Length: 273
Image (tube, rainbow, N blue to C red; front, side, top):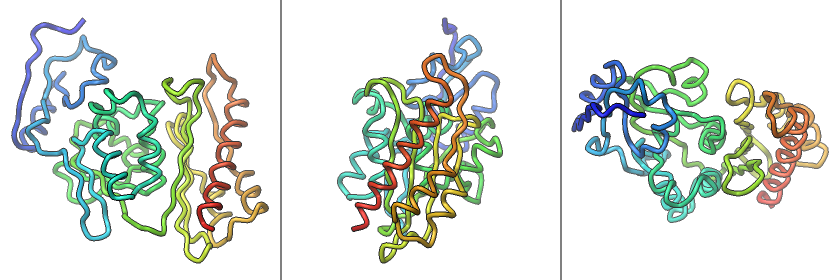
């Protein structure tokens, strides 16, 4: 049960909010969909972000900027309207239910990073960067997790993604039924020119270490056209490591993940025609 003495704060500046969350037991509140799963007995207060003006999506030069206060639905609607970030749109459109997508925020999803996250794999594949409050330099989403910045008391201001029409991206998730949490998510992004893969990023979430990039598989694809032989060789190096689970063995999930990866790359091959 939550305490009845919870303090609510309504800052109008990010600097104020940043100071407030340094207090013990005080956390940010946006959509509120994860609060009951974050040790409510230790909570002493909420910092409401609704007045921080972080719910925006805009195009700046060659980047798409997504404010951390945007909901998943906000991002889906923008992607459909502008015909951009197809892989991200695909992943978010399959997340939870419509009422939940209307509440779940980008910043909250990134900070929590649940094992079933459908947000991380496409964003890492798209080489997304984060702007954190009070920090001048952008932080890659990979470093955000690997360097344990995710565990610190901070505020995500916005996500920065390259708007590159040469990049194609697809995402697949494995679950028993559509509304169930995905067991893993696989995302592949390719930068293609004249049917040649100039660069690639291959990511899976729901594995040991939260996520993994398959750089050897990427190396096989880079500089190549997507022939069946190249795809098969790249798949050989796609070997995700899973924790033990009561539903499926690690070996079974590895097999399914390989099938999904192979299918994604073959679909991208068709997109290149």
